[in-house]
Image (tube, rainbow, N blue to C red):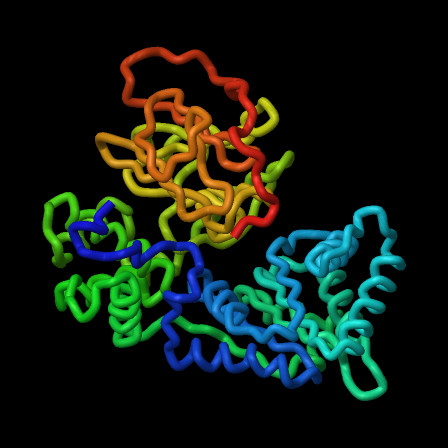
Length: 432
């Protein structure tokens, strides 16, 4: 990578939420203060909303890193679940093995646990990320849990974080009682142009740049024009721009490098992109379904390339000996991970939020790990970055990514099943 050229100690624009890189704009600082208030007040929920990529998850991770030792936390990220699944997930976070319990027993166990923790002088906090995916029934279960109390006060503190549609769901007539319990609501908007510039400088400084000016002054206007101040889009564009400068053996980023990155990513201006939001693909552990929302980048088509555009390669997503998804690769990048903001979503507990990325250029295709918990494997060897060859199989948790190079001048028989093989290492069911 470009670390040596830019004299950095780590990558400044990784997509994975890292608390040390958190830039506290005025609105992020206010949202964090609202989260912290849940430790001292138990008279209602705190709801934090924001567009995809606004920094909600990074904010949560920063808040949790600083939380006091007497606070017991359950953090839930898998939210497309039934009421029973949700209650089980909460109990698992608290150290129970509840999978044979019926619903009444789950509720009784949770209630008893909450009262015991209160009696021991500990505070209990439930944080639900991606809460916009919760069903009305699960949200009602959360309201009922919030009602557990002693003679003096409620004993469960709750933070709900999600995309803007969470507010619409909370305002539904069926959830009037829940809405009345919301004490604070805050919406994270995008960064201003000045905040975005400070955000970029902050991340570079944390990564080891000190006071060096790595991005030329005229680059910031272009970056803002194509990212709209969305932190995750800023990360993607800045990282790709630094790669462009690295290719030119230059230790600073010019506006030309930003233009090259925009061309590689095939982005349009943010104002135009916001009018036509794409939809990612969801790959589950056994079933496929659809989801909405994405990182704000142009979609990568599944199956045949759109508008007659030639696909440089294809990725087949497979599990249990069968192909469950096919993704065409054009020049640019796709992000693969567990959450709905990825280009390809693999709904598996063995896959990290943002697990890996596949970068495609006119001449090569590269898969790169994004600091995932379980890593990526090629030929049973864990790799950080790997140039893909036709037929390569990349292991990601319990799934396989099979690369097909469409540039090869040969006729290929239909690919029906995946190549056999077991994961090179037993994945951990607690990804980042």
